[in-house]
Length: 495
Ligand SMILES: Nc1ncnc2c1ncn2[C@@H]1O[C@H](COP(=O)(O)OP(=O)(O)OP(=O)(O)O)[C@@H](O)[C@H]1O
Ligand SMILES: [Mg+2]
Image 1 (spheres, rainbow, N blue to C red):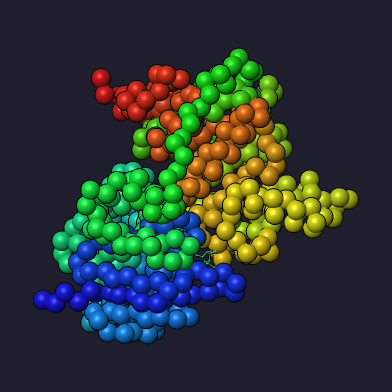
Image 2: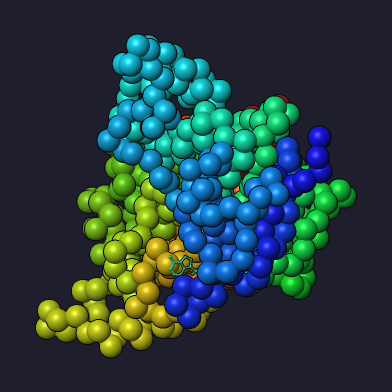
């Protein structure tokens, strides 16, 4: 056995116009290890992975596999499989066809459908997905589609597996299943390159961690006695400020800006209630299957509830559709980019201002100067890494796309702001920025409702947390009584 690394990069550079995505990056990955690549949004992680996968040709530098210099074309057809940060699936094909695309099992020159469906069902069971392999992929939830993409890579049996934020669209149970699958793949000799902003995952599964900052290599660390803070310091090049707790004074008796009573959607959630006052940040937390996810969508009329009452700014709401709610001063961020997405073919300025185009237009004409001005302000406010407002979202790193969505959500100057998973795929620094934005909006008298599966995030951000269990309201905790234990006791119902 040789100690030759399975993969090594040296002097790899890549520019997109004036943007230097990578500058002289070099590191090595040992055979049979899980190697994480870490860095802030826009640090160059996805670009590095796409170069390794042979999709992107570097301007300079060398990528060696098993000690041998390779071309991008060779790698693209080689023993490498990649799961992309943004879904890369065929929505009109069946689940099984998506898993076996290009490699359908054959018998006597014909596709062996029985074997294909059987094997697909086996793979789906790994993740506890009760999905028929014959189902059309587009019918599945984004999280399930993500799992299918992961299964495709696993089934390809490539010895080098590249996973770019595979868990960003998964729930906690699915993410845990993936962690276990990765550990099994490592045991069976696979090498895995792994990117995630969930630092606890990185610490749990990786043998080495390579840190990139501003397109440059910082260092490769052995994952031994490393803490989240060690990783953060290297990613951002400084310690992050300790987070401030929300100001309890904000728990005033201001009027409720959003009130929900007896809201139900059969099979999804029952008899939900909550209110959010001006100046308040209220969190909603629930474990998988608690109904919190469905409730978050119902509130903005994405999947409207069948019964219940909603009051917005003191007035009853009869038309629970996204357009009507927006016109009444509510705004909604769907942090699941895989579901909501941006207008990929429209420039960033248009994306930021899409929700308010009618307000930015005069006499029916869109005022391009006003749009450009707002977009520039937002790009500065959120530190979005982008050449300019004319750029396209697909030129942005994933986390920066998320920031564009947050600014689009606030562009209409809403009074009631609903944030659903606002920091998915967002790096630690940007996460703090998004939290600051939510605090500032609340301090300015807005009502903020946050759905997050990240409990520490809610504990930091919210004045009050509404907990859901078995598709119902399980209780609320506020102020001093808010802790991981008190929330989990309600969420899991362990008495
Ligand atoms: N096709 C492209 N055209 C123009 N610029 C691009 C393109 N792809 C990436 N970039 C730029 O290259 C830089 C690195 O992007 P990359 O996607 O590699 O970041 P990342 O580390 O994966 O970030 P994230 O954590 O947000 O996913 C960013 O500044 C990005 O805007
Ligand atoms: Mg990326």
